[in-house]
Image (cartoon, rainbow, N blue to C red; front, side, top):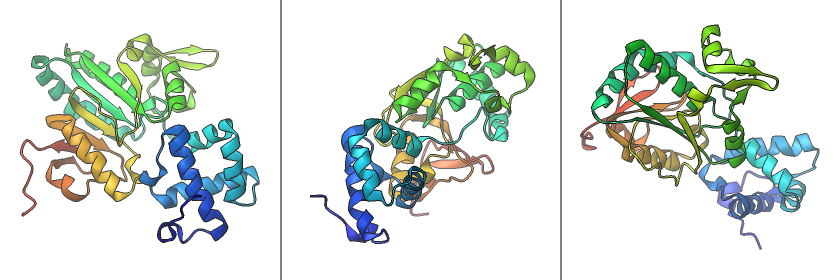
Length: 289
Protein backbone atom coordinates (compact mmCIF):
# COMPACT_ATOMS: atom_id res chain seq x y z
CA UNK A 1 0.00 0.00 0.00
CA UNK A 2 1.38 3.40 -1.00
CA UNK A 3 1.14 6.04 1.73
CA UNK A 4 -0.34 9.33 0.49
CA UNK A 5 0.55 12.59 2.26
CA UNK A 6 -2.42 14.78 1.47
CA UNK A 7 -0.73 17.93 2.78
CA UNK A 8 1.92 17.71 0.05
CA UNK A 9 -0.13 16.62 -2.90
CA UNK A 10 -3.55 17.91 -2.03
CA UNK A 11 -3.70 19.93 -5.25
CA UNK A 12 -3.45 16.77 -7.36
CA UNK A 13 -6.60 15.05 -8.58
CA UNK A 14 -7.42 12.32 -6.05
CA UNK A 15 -7.18 9.62 -8.69
CA UNK A 16 -3.60 10.72 -9.46
CA UNK A 17 -2.31 11.32 -5.92
CA UNK A 18 -1.52 7.67 -5.20
CA UNK A 19 0.14 7.32 -8.63
CA UNK A 20 2.49 10.25 -7.96
CA UNK A 21 3.57 8.74 -4.62
CA UNK A 22 4.04 5.34 -6.28
CA UNK A 23 6.04 6.94 -9.09
CA UNK A 24 8.38 8.60 -6.60
CA UNK A 25 9.00 5.23 -4.95
CA UNK A 26 9.57 3.62 -8.37
CA UNK A 27 12.23 6.21 -9.24
CA UNK A 28 14.04 5.68 -5.94
CA UNK A 29 13.93 1.89 -6.33
CA UNK A 30 14.87 1.64 -10.03
CA UNK A 31 16.96 4.77 -10.64
CA UNK A 32 18.19 5.85 -7.20
CA UNK A 33 16.64 9.22 -8.05
CA UNK A 34 14.65 11.02 -5.35
CA UNK A 35 11.93 13.26 -6.75
CA UNK A 36 11.26 14.55 -3.21
CA UNK A 37 14.37 16.73 -3.53
CA UNK A 38 12.94 18.67 -6.46
CA UNK A 39 10.23 21.29 -6.69
CA UNK A 40 7.00 19.37 -6.92
CA UNK A 41 5.37 21.87 -9.26
CA UNK A 42 8.22 21.62 -11.80
CA UNK A 43 8.27 17.83 -11.69
CA UNK A 44 4.48 17.48 -12.02
CA UNK A 45 4.35 19.90 -14.94
CA UNK A 46 6.84 17.77 -16.87
CA UNK A 47 5.19 14.49 -15.91
CA UNK A 48 1.76 15.70 -17.05
CA UNK A 49 3.25 16.88 -20.34
CA UNK A 50 4.42 13.30 -20.84
CA UNK A 51 1.01 11.91 -19.83
CA UNK A 52 -0.70 14.09 -22.43
CA UNK A 53 1.89 13.51 -25.17
CA UNK A 54 1.53 9.76 -24.72
CA UNK A 55 -2.28 9.98 -24.84
CA UNK A 56 -2.99 8.46 -21.40
CA UNK A 57 -6.16 9.54 -19.60
CA UNK A 58 -4.49 10.09 -16.21
CA UNK A 59 -1.27 9.64 -14.22
CA UNK A 60 -2.44 6.30 -12.80
CA UNK A 61 -2.54 4.71 -16.25
CA UNK A 62 0.88 6.16 -17.08
CA UNK A 63 2.33 4.85 -13.81
CA UNK A 64 1.17 1.31 -14.59
CA UNK A 65 2.93 1.53 -17.96
CA UNK A 66 6.11 2.85 -16.33
CA UNK A 67 6.13 0.10 -13.72
CA UNK A 68 6.12 -2.56 -16.49
CA UNK A 69 8.25 -0.90 -19.15
CA UNK A 70 11.90 -0.06 -18.19
CA UNK A 71 12.49 1.71 -21.51
CA UNK A 72 9.56 4.07 -20.95
CA UNK A 73 10.77 4.70 -17.39
CA UNK A 74 14.24 5.53 -18.73
CA UNK A 75 12.75 7.96 -21.24
CA UNK A 76 10.81 9.76 -18.49
CA UNK A 77 13.94 9.81 -16.29
CA UNK A 78 15.93 11.49 -19.05
CA UNK A 79 13.09 13.90 -19.76
CA UNK A 80 12.99 14.97 -16.10
CA UNK A 81 16.76 15.40 -15.76
CA UNK A 82 17.88 16.87 -19.11
CA UNK A 83 18.13 20.65 -19.43
CA UNK A 84 18.50 22.67 -22.59
CA UNK A 85 22.18 23.39 -23.17
CA UNK A 86 24.66 24.48 -25.82
CA UNK A 87 28.33 25.44 -26.07
CA UNK A 88 29.11 28.71 -24.27
CA UNK A 89 25.53 29.17 -23.14
CA UNK A 90 25.24 32.76 -21.85
CA UNK A 91 28.46 33.84 -23.62
CA UNK A 92 28.99 36.89 -21.38
CA UNK A 93 29.54 34.60 -18.38
CA UNK A 94 32.37 32.79 -20.16
CA UNK A 95 33.81 36.11 -21.36
CA UNK A 96 33.93 37.27 -17.73
CA UNK A 97 35.74 34.10 -16.66
CA UNK A 98 38.26 34.39 -19.51
CA UNK A 99 39.03 38.07 -18.94
CA UNK A 100 38.65 38.62 -15.20
CA UNK A 101 39.25 35.32 -13.42
CA UNK A 102 41.09 32.61 -15.35
CA UNK A 103 44.33 34.51 -16.20
CA UNK A 104 44.97 35.67 -12.64
CA UNK A 105 43.85 32.55 -10.79
CA UNK A 106 45.62 30.16 -13.15
CA UNK A 107 48.84 32.13 -12.74
CA UNK A 108 48.45 31.88 -8.95
CA UNK A 109 47.93 28.13 -9.28
CA UNK A 110 51.33 27.74 -10.93
CA UNK A 111 52.55 27.47 -7.33
CA UNK A 112 49.86 25.04 -6.17
CA UNK A 113 49.54 22.49 -8.96
CA UNK A 114 46.52 21.68 -11.10
CA UNK A 115 43.68 24.19 -11.53
CA UNK A 116 40.63 22.06 -10.73
CA UNK A 117 37.15 22.91 -12.06
CA UNK A 118 33.89 21.07 -11.32
CA UNK A 119 30.93 21.28 -13.71
CA UNK A 120 28.05 20.02 -11.55
CA UNK A 121 24.98 18.86 -13.48
CA UNK A 122 26.86 18.80 -16.78
CA UNK A 123 24.09 17.22 -18.89
CA UNK A 124 25.35 16.29 -22.38
CA UNK A 125 28.80 17.84 -21.93
CA UNK A 126 28.59 21.21 -23.66
CA UNK A 127 29.40 23.14 -20.45
CA UNK A 128 32.51 21.22 -19.31
CA UNK A 129 33.90 21.16 -22.85
CA UNK A 130 33.25 24.93 -23.11
CA UNK A 131 35.18 25.45 -19.86
CA UNK A 132 38.07 23.37 -21.21
CA UNK A 133 38.14 25.39 -24.45
CA UNK A 134 38.14 28.65 -22.45
CA UNK A 135 41.01 27.48 -20.27
CA UNK A 136 43.04 26.32 -23.28
CA UNK A 137 42.54 29.72 -24.93
CA UNK A 138 43.65 31.54 -21.76
CA UNK A 139 46.74 29.34 -21.40
CA UNK A 140 47.82 30.12 -24.96
CA UNK A 141 46.96 33.80 -24.87
CA UNK A 142 48.78 34.43 -21.57
CA UNK A 143 51.45 31.73 -21.93
CA UNK A 144 50.42 30.10 -18.65
CA UNK A 145 51.75 26.61 -18.02
CA UNK A 146 49.46 25.67 -15.12
CA UNK A 147 47.74 22.34 -15.87
CA UNK A 148 43.98 22.18 -15.43
CA UNK A 149 41.29 19.53 -15.19
CA UNK A 150 37.50 19.71 -15.51
CA UNK A 151 35.39 17.22 -13.55
CA UNK A 152 31.90 16.84 -15.06
CA UNK A 153 29.12 15.10 -13.13
CA UNK A 154 25.48 14.32 -13.72
CA UNK A 155 22.94 11.92 -12.21
CA UNK A 156 21.91 10.54 -15.62
CA UNK A 157 24.17 7.75 -16.93
CA UNK A 158 22.59 7.85 -20.39
CA UNK A 159 23.26 11.56 -20.90
CA UNK A 160 26.84 11.10 -19.66
CA UNK A 161 27.35 8.34 -22.24
CA UNK A 162 26.23 10.83 -24.88
CA UNK A 163 28.59 13.48 -23.46
CA UNK A 164 31.54 11.08 -23.67
CA UNK A 165 31.01 10.60 -27.42
CA UNK A 166 31.80 14.32 -27.82
CA UNK A 167 29.78 14.66 -31.03
CA UNK A 168 27.45 17.65 -31.46
CA UNK A 169 25.25 19.36 -33.99
CA UNK A 170 26.30 22.53 -35.80
CA UNK A 171 23.44 24.35 -34.04
CA UNK A 172 24.95 23.67 -30.61
CA UNK A 173 28.17 25.45 -31.73
CA UNK A 174 26.44 28.70 -32.69
CA UNK A 175 28.18 30.72 -29.92
CA UNK A 176 31.65 29.75 -31.17
CA UNK A 177 33.74 31.67 -33.68
CA UNK A 178 34.55 29.83 -36.90
CA UNK A 179 38.24 29.73 -36.03
CA UNK A 180 37.46 28.04 -32.70
CA UNK A 181 35.28 25.45 -34.43
CA UNK A 182 38.15 24.65 -36.78
CA UNK A 183 40.61 24.44 -33.91
CA UNK A 184 38.62 22.45 -31.36
CA UNK A 185 36.27 20.31 -33.50
CA UNK A 186 36.47 17.95 -36.42
CA UNK A 187 33.56 17.70 -38.86
CA UNK A 188 32.35 14.14 -39.31
CA UNK A 189 29.41 12.41 -40.93
CA UNK A 190 27.41 12.38 -37.64
CA UNK A 191 28.27 15.94 -36.60
CA UNK A 192 31.15 17.87 -35.05
CA UNK A 193 33.52 15.84 -32.88
CA UNK A 194 35.35 17.54 -30.00
CA UNK A 195 39.15 17.43 -30.38
CA UNK A 196 41.22 14.97 -28.38
CA UNK A 197 43.05 17.92 -26.79
CA UNK A 198 39.80 19.19 -25.24
CA UNK A 199 38.44 15.71 -24.54
CA UNK A 200 41.51 14.76 -22.48
CA UNK A 201 40.93 17.73 -20.16
CA UNK A 202 37.50 16.51 -19.02
CA UNK A 203 36.51 13.55 -16.81
CA UNK A 204 32.85 12.48 -16.64
CA UNK A 205 31.42 10.77 -13.56
CA UNK A 206 27.95 9.77 -12.44
CA UNK A 207 26.84 11.54 -9.29
CA UNK A 208 23.76 12.85 -7.48
CA UNK A 209 24.53 16.45 -6.60
CA UNK A 210 22.90 16.00 -3.19
CA UNK A 211 25.25 13.17 -2.24
CA UNK A 212 28.32 13.38 -4.47
CA UNK A 213 31.75 14.11 -3.02
CA UNK A 214 34.08 15.15 -5.84
CA UNK A 215 37.27 14.42 -3.89
CA UNK A 216 39.98 17.03 -4.62
CA UNK A 217 39.35 20.65 -3.69
CA UNK A 218 38.37 22.92 -6.56
CA UNK A 219 39.11 26.50 -7.57
CA UNK A 220 35.90 26.92 -9.55
CA UNK A 221 32.53 25.17 -9.36
CA UNK A 222 30.01 25.82 -12.13
CA UNK A 223 26.41 24.80 -11.42
CA UNK A 224 23.97 26.58 -13.71
CA UNK A 225 20.24 26.20 -14.16
CA UNK A 226 20.01 23.19 -11.87
CA UNK A 227 19.28 24.63 -8.42
CA UNK A 228 16.02 26.11 -9.67
CA UNK A 229 14.54 22.60 -9.78
CA UNK A 230 15.30 21.89 -6.10
CA UNK A 231 13.34 22.83 -3.00
CA UNK A 232 14.88 25.70 -1.01
CA UNK A 233 16.19 23.39 1.74
CA UNK A 234 18.10 21.31 -0.79
CA UNK A 235 19.38 24.40 -2.62
CA UNK A 236 21.00 25.50 0.66
CA UNK A 237 22.38 22.00 1.24
CA UNK A 238 23.95 21.88 -2.23
CA UNK A 239 25.58 25.31 -1.99
CA UNK A 240 26.84 24.50 1.50
CA UNK A 241 28.45 21.38 0.02
CA UNK A 242 30.09 23.52 -2.67
CA UNK A 243 31.65 25.73 0.02
CA UNK A 244 33.35 22.65 1.49
CA UNK A 245 34.73 21.63 -1.91
CA UNK A 246 36.30 24.99 -2.79
CA UNK A 247 39.67 26.37 -1.79
CA UNK A 248 39.45 29.58 0.24
CA UNK A 249 38.96 32.30 -2.35
CA UNK A 250 37.56 29.80 -4.87
CA UNK A 251 34.75 30.75 -7.22
CA UNK A 252 31.16 29.57 -7.70
CA UNK A 253 29.14 30.34 -10.84
CA UNK A 254 25.36 29.84 -10.82
CA UNK A 255 22.71 30.26 -13.52
CA UNK A 256 21.29 33.65 -14.46
CA UNK A 257 18.06 32.97 -12.56
CA UNK A 258 19.77 31.58 -9.45
CA UNK A 259 21.25 33.22 -6.38
CA UNK A 260 22.59 32.47 -2.91
CA UNK A 261 20.02 31.88 -0.21
CA UNK A 262 20.01 31.43 3.55
CA UNK A 263 23.25 31.33 5.53
CA UNK A 264 25.27 30.60 2.39
CA UNK A 265 25.29 34.36 1.80
CA UNK A 266 27.67 34.66 4.76
CA UNK A 267 30.19 32.32 3.13
CA UNK A 268 30.35 33.88 -0.34
CA UNK A 269 30.80 37.41 -1.64
CA UNK A 270 29.39 38.52 -4.96
CA UNK A 271 32.04 39.11 -7.65
CA UNK A 272 29.76 39.68 -10.63
CA UNK A 273 26.05 40.08 -9.79
CA UNK A 274 25.20 40.08 -13.49
CA UNK A 275 26.95 36.79 -14.22
CA UNK A 276 26.07 35.24 -10.84
CA UNK A 277 29.71 34.64 -9.91
CA UNK A 278 30.64 34.43 -6.23
CA UNK A 279 33.87 34.01 -4.28
CA UNK A 280 34.25 31.94 -1.12
CA UNK A 281 35.26 34.15 1.79
CA UNK A 282 38.35 33.12 3.74
CA UNK A 283 36.38 33.94 6.90
CA UNK A 284 32.55 33.80 6.77
CA UNK A 285 30.57 36.80 7.93
CA UNK A 286 28.78 36.49 11.25
CA UNK A 287 25.05 35.79 11.05
CA UNK A 288 24.67 38.36 13.84
CA UNK A 289 25.39 41.18 11.41
